[in-house]
Image: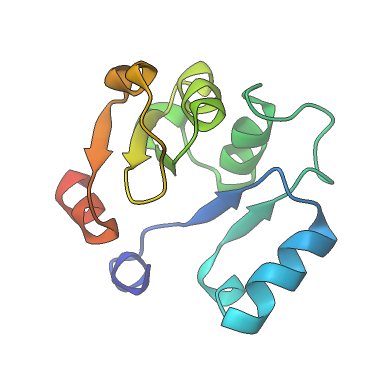
Length: 119
């Protein structure tokens, strides 16, 4: 994530966790400062696999879906991303095997591989 920030790439997180759960799990790692936006289940009325949370984040960032990559490890992540019009990058280090993942736009073995897919 620091490599992305060094290259002035905006980073957001869209999670099904509540604000409280997000704070409890991310604050003590010091990761929150790396995100330009955090969207939790507390921020939207619809949740993944609905595209609303991703579209909400992209709108707040001033980003277009077709110029964005969403990294996730679940089928809900993939459906939400693709329904929003963003590319989906499968984080294989956290994903369980599923034949549906064959429709992922990008498949990542390690987090650093995302750098190869940025323009």
